[in-house]
Length: 121
Ligand code: AMP
Image (cartoon, rainbow, N blue to C red; front, side, top):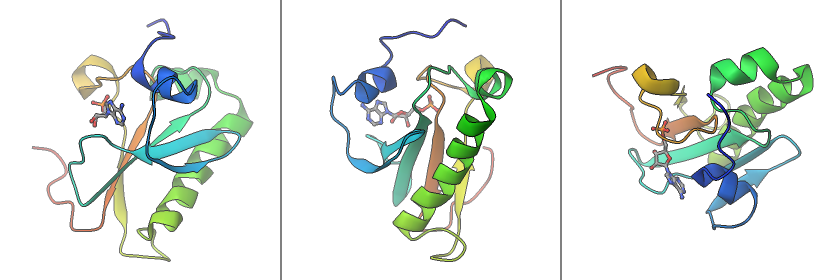
């Protein structure tokens, strides 16, 4: 799939629409999901133009890959849900059609603050 420059997360990255920012560095932006499914529901997105995790894994630089994985940990710590600051969380990325992905810019959902429950309905 070609990257759509006008997807909602691209617009957030460009500052065209607002978000409730949690954390930002050279590689990632993290903000609260607009429609939280759990007590804590954050999103972590890379700054690069990647549609999904497969696109990212195949094309991103090693630096970008490290930046995203480390960024998830940084955000989890900041939210007090990481293993060392809290009780853990679930990181989830929906990929394309069968994964149920709605926004075509790679993102990880971080669910925490309570037991997350069943892995898949
Ligand atoms: P997915 O189905 O994995 O693509 O998830 C997309 C997520 O983006 C959903 O959980 C939405 O609630 C969330 N979302 C959509 N628009 C916004 C927005 N403007 N700000 C924050 N989260 C959003």
